[in-house]
Length: 104
Image 1 (cartoon, rainbow, N blue to C red):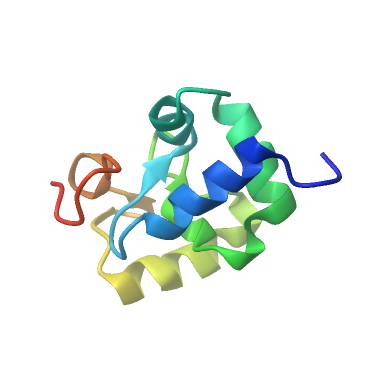
Image 2: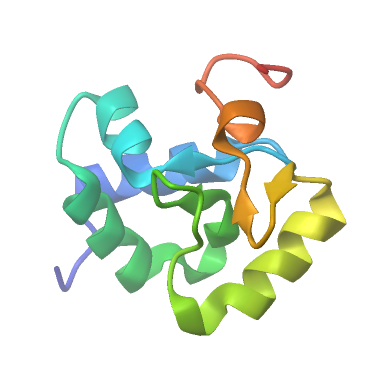
């Protein structure tokens, strides 16, 4: 993945639209786009995700992108009012469906 492809552009566009305080799992993004899978979304995020709100993309269990980013994720989540359960996102309350800013 040296040059950005159409799939990467779609992933980054969707991540930019996730409202503050909400998240999508890697698999949610792939499902919403109807292509790729969690690993492909993860590859896009690790390569080009630094310019988008990367902390809004989490694992299905609510854990952040990588253990070494936990402190930064927690700071962003707390600043945005993202519902948490300990040091993970409360997926039941914070998961975004990609359609509306107020999805619960």
